[in-house]
Image (tube, rainbow over all chains, first blue to last red):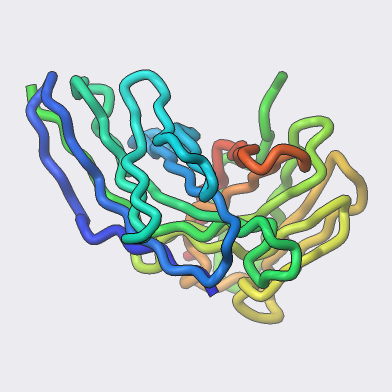
Length: 119
Length: 115
């Protein structure tokens, strides 16, 4: 079974500063993907960034980067130059890619971290 | 592309009534997922389909919940009878098969309140 842990219920950051949102995972699968989603107060789920377990380089998408440390089973999201519009709930999720695994095909989500950006 | 479409966006009903939530996935996507989000339990996967076939329904809370996907462009999640503890936001999501990096695309959600 897979498990995602986000230990920070809430985080605060000053506008224009960088912030790191923590995510650790537990899985017995060898091949998997890690995803981050943003959920603003309006409720929709917005995909931010993806990291494959065999990717050698950390993923980046604009101001978002994923600090992937496979040995430590962590996939932290780094947001650079925070903006007021970054205030939202952030979810880390993972999906197994081995068809024989019980978690194949579906995402397992963490509990989320609420990020508040102060002006 | 219209994205994942869910209806209704809001539903208020009384305990004991039947509730039907609807979802139209993105055209060409052969995976469809139903999630429930509450403050207490976070985001839970209820069931998912691949090519209209239910693959994993282990997250369906009990027999009061049922989901169907009669064709590639339509799915329903039904609660009968509804209870106050079913109050939540229900999301539908879809994704194509193929690349491992392919993400799920979420609909706007249905906010259900059972009185």
